[in-house]
Length: 552
Image 1 (tube, one colour):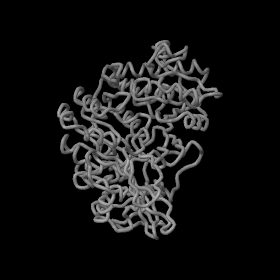
Image 2: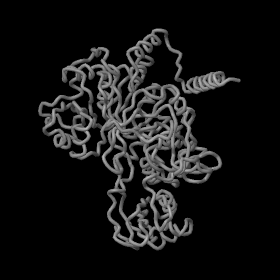
Image 3: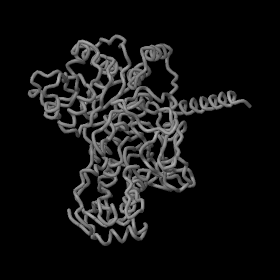
């Protein structure tokens, strides 16, 4: 059999598989002929990262699209609002602004700003709501933003960031109408232009997602409508999304994971229930009230939910819940098992990268066996683990995670890109495979600590500390040491009423890991510094001044 025939057969098999998965998810709908015509018309206008909203409106216009603290919108209403905002944006700026920044929490104004700007032909820069004024200014200048759409609570930060810049301002969420001082709002633009539709833009707008910035200034990664049906099928093959159901999206929509869940909900015409600020008890109540089948979170949210008192958890049994999908950082293994013990085997833990999209997903069955696994690579994605000489490492050994997929980004907005080995993108993470093909992310490549000539990955030590029954969470870093080059410093948050001391924590690690992996410094903290998506900001940890340090 020739190579061309084998390639053709592989393509046919992939297409048959993809169609089967999409049919099971309800992605290939049986609707009235006129709605098919509308859906085709939407695609002909140009496909972007937010086209799913218009497709959902064409498919199920009267179905509830979004429920936030202001109430509910149908897909037709949400779509019309996005069109109206696009027209208002063009009127306000006098043309197609190259980049529109959005600094907003989860609500309808975020969606109007996001989708409306792409319909106007603009790139949309999604901003971290935890930015300070100087951070925001740096990113706005670097990305050449012509407009910022923001929640009123961030007015002070925006004022600092835009001082002296020619940046149009539109308020997405208003807390106090008396403090608007004549500023334009998203609601005003939508009301003024309801029923209007923007013309076809001169270019396709992309979404610019910022990296987490845990080690410095976040980089902008531009993404269009990449991956397509194949990427959706790869997700649905592991996570049981089904069309026209209800999903609570608690993950911040400015983050790659939260934005992705919004996009998937639109693609499946699911109802999105959300609120501006995460509260574990309120989130469970939303699942219960709306009989949601899905919950989208970042890992720290899941941990805070399961850490609620039993009497609170008992009020929301969430029997409708079929999946709770998480990504963005590591999850505590004990929290994973405790959550599934209470709510059923529903957790799907995904390993994503802003630059590579979905890489692997752990199903509930995977997590029951290995609660700290990132699962197996999804279909259409190949993962290789390479050593320093670019050779694949044996099963069980740690190597650099390199990814080949159809969802890779096209580069950073600065013009830089990730490192590649051939067609494989270097993720920047290191990991290992077990004998069953499950991937375990060990840490960041640049996090590796060399202490006394031995290589140590902090994540391995963190996972070991977190297994102690009196430890709530931990973070481990390397600090300079005259004798060993570097030494390990552990920062530990204990559970209420814990009696373990520094020596007990060291003994716990020593009983399970090699001696050179035992932290020489242990610092007790009330909490770990985190960014808005729950990732620990290790560069903000206090200095460890010497071995055997304990404090809070």
